[in-house]
Length: 204
Image 1 (tube, rainbow, N blue to C red):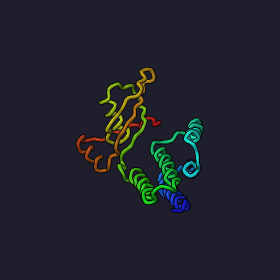
Image 2 (cartoon, rainbow, N blue to C red):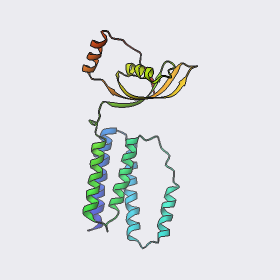
Image 3 (cartoon, rainbow, N blue to C red):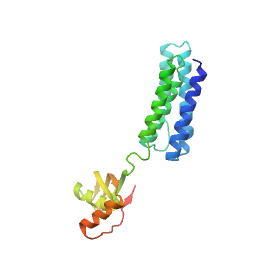
């Protein structure tokens, strides 16, 4: 099959990944050019190495040069790293025109489907992960869980105490929790018989 078909398939796939999935969900414009550039760049290098009469040493040398390049950028979240590696994988699949076209295009579709499902906003939509600073020194996880749940207005599933400062009277925690629905709030009020208001702690 013509190499131009592979190129077109890769461009369609990366466009769907960036403009159909990533940007509508995360709205981070600066990473658009990164995803596009790394995808097309990997595709071009892969095609050149797959079609040219290169020695193994030359190919290893190219990847050695690429490996010493350090990307300096703002911190990327885990889901953005997933998009980044998906862009690379699509480029690799689009850069092997001598491979099986059906397998390559199927793998491209599978990658897009995995990202679509795994990063869908409705998947565990109420689950959250945050860094929380409690306004008191707490070493007991049970007590920290109770305080974090009251401050965040949710159900804490797991809490990890990262740092307890007895001088500043603060506790830094990593909290994994779910937002409560209005029905959950009403059930809690009915069970306790009253409502307690708290001042949210600083979030970082």
